[in-house]
Image (cartoon, one colour):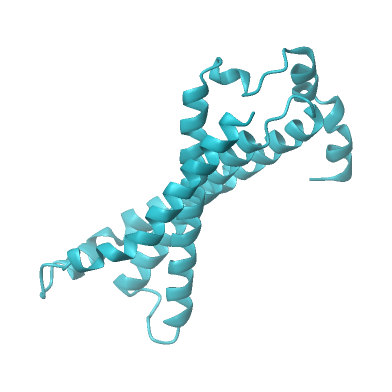
Length: 184
C-alpha cells in the first residue's frame, strides 16, 4: 500500500460508511447473526493456520528433496499441487479472518485498511488456485499412472496420529473465536 492509500483510509468510502452506520459488534453483513459470525471467525482462523501448516510442510519437503527429485517427477508435481492449494487457502482464509478479527466500528480507518488489504490479497490467493488447478490438470495423467503402480493400497490408518496437531489448532481456533464473540 502506498502512503497516499494509507493516509486516505480515514476518508475512504468504507470508512465513511462505517462511521455513518450504526456501531455494531459484528460486521453488518452478518445481519446480527452472532452464531454465523462465530462460525465464520472460527473456520477462517482454523483454515488459515491449517493451510499455513500444510504449506510449510510441503515447502520443507520440496526444499529437502530438491537435489533428489526432478521437477517433472510425479511426487514433485503432487507436492507443488498441495503447496499451491495450501497457499491459496491460507491467503484467502487469512484475508477473511483478518477482516473478521479486525472489525471495530470505533476505528473506521483501520477497518478500511484491513478491507483494502483483503481486496489485494484475494487475487493473489486466486492466482495460487489457478496454478494449483493448472498443475492438477496438466500432471493428472502422469501422476495417476504412477499412483496405480504397486504396492497398493496405502496404509492411511497409521497416519491418524499426525492429525493430532491439526485437531489442536481447530480446538484452539474455536476457543479463540468463541472468546472473541462472547467478549465483544
